[in-house]
Length: 210
Image 1: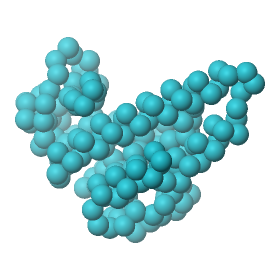
Image 2 (image 1 turned 180 degrees about the horizontal axis):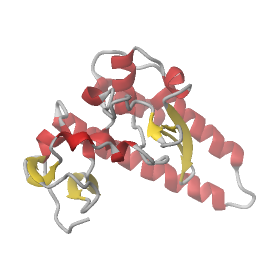
Image 3 (image 1 turned 90 degrees about the vertical axis):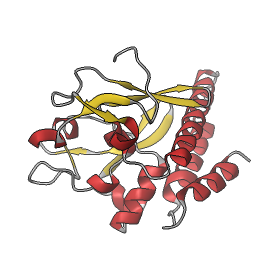
Image 4 (image 1 turned 45 degrees about the horizontal axis):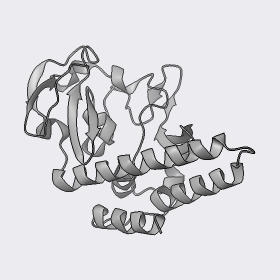
C-alpha cells in the first residue's frame, strides 16, 4: 500500500475503467471477502433471500482469530465468486459487499476515525483518479462510516476476548462456542427488515452488549 491516507472527499487513483472485461478480483479470493451485517442486509433485501438460504450456495462460514464470520464463497475449478455471471460480470453489482466496493482501497481505523489507503499494484486496470465517495457508491456515507467503526471495534473486542479464553487452562470451548453462536444469531441469522438498517443494527448492538 502507499503511505497516504484518504478521506471520502479526496481523489485517489482507484478508477479502473469499468474493469475493461477483467474479473480477477472476483476469483481465487479464498475466504477473504468478509461480509458484515450491512452486506447481509443488502443481499437479503435485494435477493429476497435469508441468511440460511445464502449459506446453502453463495456464502460460507469460517473462523478468523476465534470469531466465526461469513464470507463470499469461491466456487468451481476457477474459484469464482458465486455471483459472477457467465460474462464475467458481477450479478449483484448494485448491492455488492463493502469489500468489493472498496477494492483496490483498504480501510485504516484510528479511534473513531476511518480513512482509506490505496493497495498499490493490486488492480492492473486502476490508475484513473476518482473521488473516494464516488468510488464506494454508498448512500448515507455518514451513517455507514459510523457503522463500520462500531463494527470494527466490536469484532476487535470479541476476537481479543475469544483469544484470551482460548489461552486459559483448561480452554473453555463451550463458552467460546456460546459467544460465537450468540454473535452469529443476533447480527446475521435474525432476518433484517427492508427498512432502516442502521436503526436495526443499533438495536442489535445494544442487545448484544447487555
